[in-house]
Image (tube, rainbow, N blue to C red):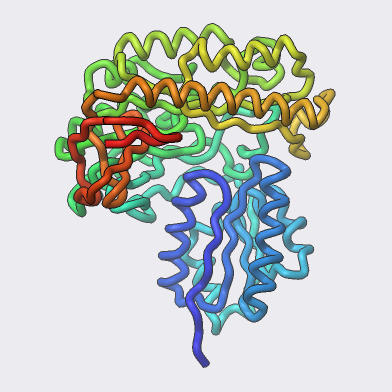
Length: 419
């Protein structure tokens, strides 16, 4: 009987994508076949709905394969998926990183496997950051250095899917990055659920800035280091020092801001206020004038009035944000915000559209300002690469893939620069 390789479907964040790559390796090593693995996201109710929709479609398209559901939604709502007729197995976020789990999914053992394997995520004290040497294009690799979150924002279910914050030791991270550079990667991105909490569970309580400085010192051949989403209120002095003095640290930060009104930020149980965000953006840009910012912003959080939304909209200009991730609020069962007075859905949709329009205007202004400048562009494919600020650049002629090339910017079309 011919067996087929497992099919993987990834939902949600970059960390989930990283773990999907790790699961592919684990499943291959265990000899898993004729299976569909859906790595779910739980960040919103819509994310869970999309996961269920994907499960049904994949089952229709592959009627004889075993369906394995994992990820954050499987961790927070195992019964939801176990009750679906299309689902054979539900495994938690810890279990999906365990080689023994995948060994039990091999064809000769699958009849003895428990259909639901989801343990208490809060009891986990380690993160499996060493499982794979990054992933991504051949030019850029993503390295997980942290997992979980100790904070309890009122809109967020993710701590219950990921557990408490755990850090990958600096030595392990440095060794990983050395191997990546040796195999030809020119850029590494540090990822995590709450990246700026890195080190709080390690001896000596190091900070993210300590890790960044250590990587840049001990891996001198790494051309570009990039940081994924951070919480600006938790940025430490060494990270600010790296921003000021290390040209190999890319001048692009994605900020977990979520809102621009102090009352909403308090109701979200965030740890910063509006002025904190503005001050951080100003300070970092003084240290690095070419710094650009992305940000997560939620539209229509419960109790949000027109005036509160206006403060959030104004934050786009006040912080000089460029790359926005706008999330229309949807109540997530099990979170305090779901029990707060909700904003009308049509109003949420309209406010999200206004935020996206503001973000698009900022992108257009940023791209226009690059025309005539020279940039170092990391090529993701022969005709497209990204600047240090993460703007896409398209070329008329083929360039050496995965290499950093010097480019003169001649124009901007849509959301891309031309060179």
